[in-house]
Image 1 (cartoon, rainbow, N blue to C red):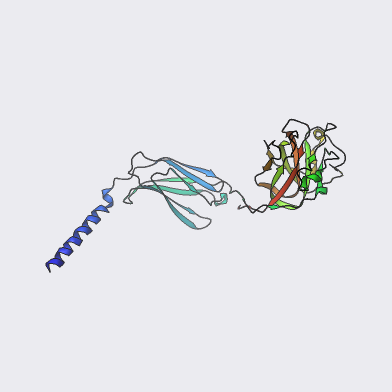
Image 2 (cartoon, rainbow, N blue to C red):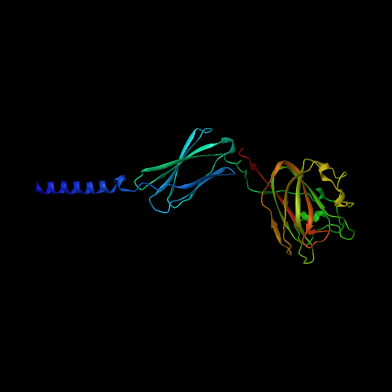
Length: 298
């Protein structure tokens, strides 16, 4: 009987000890955060703050609800974090109210803060790039050179290259217009410089798209047309982007990022405004173009 009583006293003493150690009142009041900010980004909002110098703060909790989806969220970060990225958001969700609150080790809440922000439009997502089978007979230029035709761009042989007109001066810009064979929503391209050290490659290019193209009206691949007399806006083109500092190295490859187009388009216009060696002509070994599926969240 005495042994049983002693065991009960021991268990009771341990319980009291653990109870005292878990008493939330034994922890200091959590120190507060300062300078709470909400910074919108594409499909996200970043909440940031300044953490206190002491360690009375154990974690920061963020609560918010999205009315459009009917879902509520609670997220926590440690005392060492000074920001929390809230992602998977859409601009169309509108303004979101966030409650940011500090806690100590005993889960005692400290001051809470309210802040409101709206995400920017979410960026599109892309599928795996698929190489397009380009027809060399459906590539046109305003500065053709008969012995180095545009068909060489898609023959798979870097030693057989395209060269724009150089024997007769054709004012920049020089153009390449390519029939992709189908409408695409996003593209990326891979260009390979020639294997000749002296050749000048493209350095700065503007990329345009159009719904159609009339070779007889523009560049039929036979006669050359000074680029400074060309107004391609009359062809219904839309400027998509400008790419700069393309490489100059012999046989060097340039891989573009995926370029989302303003709308699905079939024709791609490369406007070459500057070459790597400052010449009024350029050469290129190979050109590959890839289509990418694109999902626009909103």
